[in-house]
View: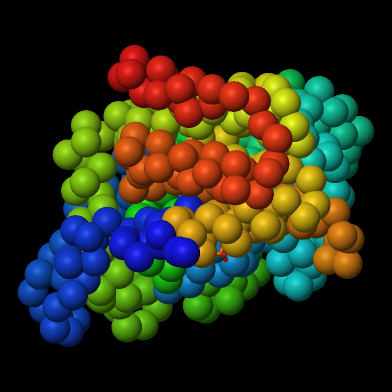
Length: 399
Ligand SMILES: *Cc1c(COP(=O)(O)O)cnc(C)c1O
């Protein structure tokens, strides 16, 4: 029989669980976009976003998903014929430079594999070798959602500084923002990209681009920037519609205002990071115990290299797909598919899956996700180390 009737739980790495408060804030009649509340709330909304990104500089909002935010960021500072250095630790790293290729921007790709973060010394060596400073930007994925690798942004910045290279540091924070610590100004990031539907707990539809004064200057030196992606009118609008290059994403803005209020009520972004850190340690504790026997493996061996937003796992084909299916049908939780770990026709692909723990998740939800996984492993006869749930509960008990 199925025990899935009850509230469904989407535990994939985005879109993430949406708080009822956010959904309720969006459930309203269309507001006037020429006057009144929605126009007046913009300055606070922008300040709220900047506090989450830890920047005092600029924030532009686009009606787009993360792919749109990728293109927006590239379009403002890079022209056809420019070259970038792309540091890849999974599928999303490649996605960004593929986006750049569509704009006529060539990427020098440095591949760091699927299990360990970017090695800053290699970045320094590549940049030192670029004596003519042909590389205009370094593209880095803070958390690659496919592998769940967490990259050390400050270390990449230090490598760039050590090489004395003037390239812009551009960071994809779509998975990490609101989950893993990210310090845009403190770490010397020039452009940071995010989207609404992951740590920010709002439905997909808002792309966010944060940029430094150095990036703003680069934008001003560009011969042309595509009108829609141009961030300049969006950060210095004379009229409300210029924030969005057209009609505002009205209901998403109400949702975003609510999610930013929830982050502030929790104690600010530091408190949100601390919750995600604690929950991630509970998840890792369970997984590490289960991995002691049987086929389950965490994709990233070192805890310091793991994201607190998502965990990529391998459990041997066909167990990954079977476990996801079992959990969805029997318990009502949907786990994430594996991504970028194998080619599409590779039968081993059915061994990969992911657990999303970004955004609006608490200890009870994380424990329920782990319990559903253990029930699934028992039902499917997948061997695993015993005591995983107790190990997670112990971490939660230390809250
Ligand atoms: C989700 C994600 C993207 C893509 O975002 P979309 O909204 O699906 O376009 C890009 N990069 C990272 C790291 C992501 O997690």
